Length: 319
Image (cartoon, rainbow, N blue to C red):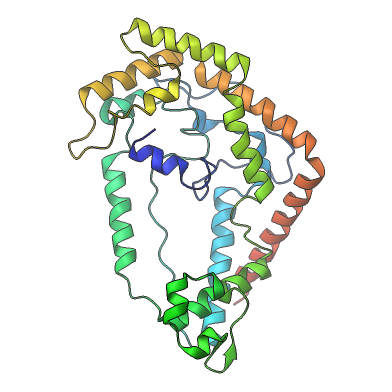
């Protein structure tokens, strides 16, 4: 997609998003099957936001991510306070785009939404998000020296260059700055960057998506979808090609009638041929095979995540 929706989907490693909300999964569960029946809105295709993928068993849920973030912020604030620095973290940004990892992974599916916005994000949601970004950018910032205390050597080079000689040597107010700053110290306390999936989980989740499009059953259903669209007057080789149509870029006046008509035809053909269902089944098979091939490493990743969650709970329980 070349729309604002696409930028949201692909930010954070090919829709593994991360920081995007994820559907819940059972701690330590080795694999999650597709539900027997998906929720379907009248006139829409199946709703993948109600589904799961096996790799979700190895990454934090939405609430777990928030718990880890709260614990990290608390630890960072305590660390900065020891240096005499008053710090208020930026507020959480409002939701924008997909509901979770699966919502738009296989493309659009909500006819009611697409009848208004085509392939685009709800403009009101986009406006709230951009307003929050502007407000965050306008907030007072820490001094360059204090930013080194916050992020250590991970801060941008220009910040390090503008910081004073003491901070550049790794000290602030006579105290040594922890490696990676207060953020680095907090993450070590919690057990690494546990708010996001491990590199292995991220890689396997990213890899399964393009691999699923090479599955013979997926290629076959794409061909049926393409023929369905052709019969309606639209020529696209595969579903995501319609999303990626350069004509369908965000516009101040909103989606054009051509974009909306295309999106509704797209959803109709998806629903008729079960595109998302077949695609999701293929990706589920691929992820299950990946889990079987990486069982030991993934189990270790899950144990590390569970340990981080216990540490986060302990941090938050302290006064």
